[in-house]
Length: 307
Image (cartoon, rainbow, N blue to C red; front, side, top):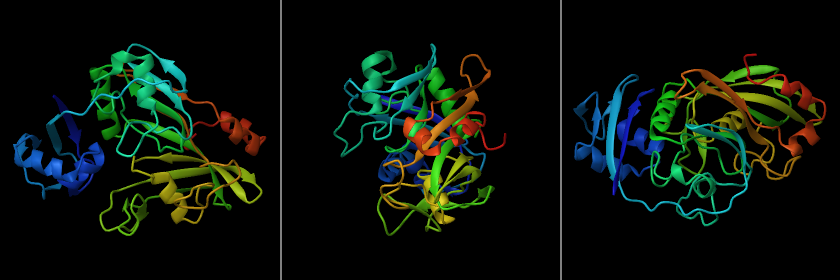
């Protein structure tokens, strides 16, 4: 038995039980139980599951959990950068980040435990070292914490929106040269596993994008999310009429590269030990380069939407 201890700075108005269930990927019933037992506090005081959070409130959490640790397994992925505190990996498309009910194949976490066993237990038993996620079919760069201190500091940076990311996407049609999509999203009440704009319970979300160029009926864009909602870029681009190519949930299967055409390209953050801002980028996947042609060279000179 171990405890999940964390402090989270609320960044929107929302019911605390739903907010934490989504944020921590813990069932709402377990969150409610912990609140009633006084294991979750707001600004140092007991609260209720129905409490409406206000931006800036501090949520203190201490929840006992007893999940089994993931088993080590051979998993193929590339390490982009590593030091004593963090690892940046290049996650392949088709690789799930961490074990979950219904996931039988080895995950990125299983592979990390195999090559870096010291990560076990950092942050949580189930998802050691994981401070953010990518969808299974999205490829690209991910940060992983190697120590508890790095885990806590990176978690806080994500909560305070000090981490900035960019994604390469191939989308259907021809969107404007640039734009912003400030639309709140939430779980779609009619489709399990799907998110949508205009759902009953939504959370603030903002994505900006910049078009790199066009290839036939498709466009290549750089998308930069300023919030970290599940499926955010996929939902936003689909809503404005330009779904990501090969997206079976929000667009059409197949597409020009035979998979979801979304790649986590670059990330910038403050190093948890050195205190200096770092910028790391992954390689543009070969299937993207082959489709984009000369546009790939343009992308290599442009890392974020505001450059």
